[in-house]
Image 1 (cartoon, rainbow, N blue to C red):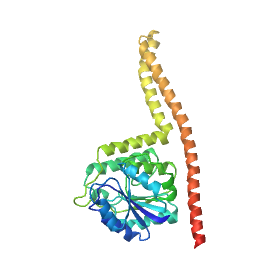
Image 2: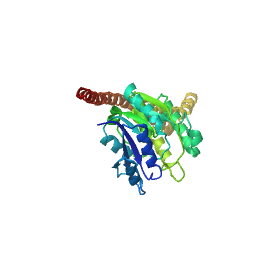
Image 3: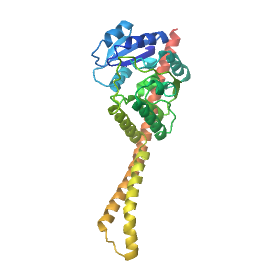
Image 4: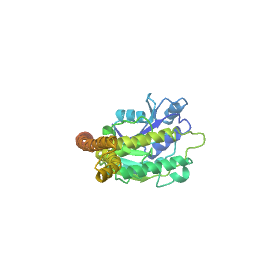
Length: 318
């Protein structure tokens, strides 16, 4: 088991990967640097290997799939995950490792948005998207995470071995953040500098398609983690629509004693019934979500206990 593992997911990063590996080794000399190649068609693998990285492969395309493979295979007390595009200075990594190993952080966020991101990044829609995602998640999940979509993070052993990777692509960072927030994990924050990609290096992130996937992930996770709030919104909307169309029918009945729009009355009744069903569905799913959280806490404690025993045995041998 490694003390520190640096995990670098890569797809066609020939121009930058050697520098990222060298910077990781310089910043964390005791770390093992793993480069996980995701079907690169350039010389990413050869370049990373020459720089001294351990090469692994994930053949199913997508960043989420790569991270699933990394988390399954690598055992370490602390994990650093960084993109292979040389946009994150590795000199901030020791601060992030320190928060995991000595201050019990489960996840440490390399915060670009409080630093140079908005001045360095040349893609305006990315700036707007990062701000939108951050404000949405902080409002929906009642938290204060500074950078939701950063690709520079540190993790504890417990986080890595209990995180259920469901996303396939770039929405994985959003999923990580929401998972940590929902389960009340300790989240650290280290403000890091950000630099735009060097000349000739091309981003794999599609502004529109990946942006919609991220928003879809927020929608899905809010439904799964906060079902009462999610279904209560639908119940309120349905009840409002039902009342809006029912009031004229009621006023007409009070003035004439007749129900002239009987089909409208029937539809209003069914819509109100749907609102009631939505409300109680939210209640039942909320109870299930609470049970899932209790089960997660139990699994998380087992994983952390396993890590503590491993550390104790290591100390005894010394």
